[in-house]
Image (cartoon, rainbow, N blue to C red):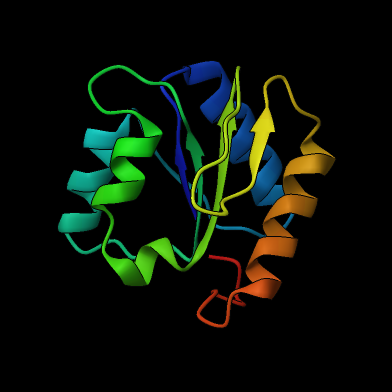
Length: 118
């Protein structure tokens, strides 16, 4: 599980809550940080990705991901959501239950999704 958000409070809250739900979260400060992590070999089973971030936003990162990662479990978050290639987008602020439901739904729908919730 990879959490990509430029807000440290949001990252910390998501890490804590997702860990309680059985995920193994790791986080990145922005899209560039996440891309560097992935290029070093980290392969997330799911990604929670903020749409608007400095340096590299979520949409730019999403388009730069290898196809195998784009097809995994990806959920976007945004203050002002807009559709992106069939990826669910949750409006901030969102309820944690809504994020968990979105992650489980998108992971169940993806044949390449990581069922171990990493």
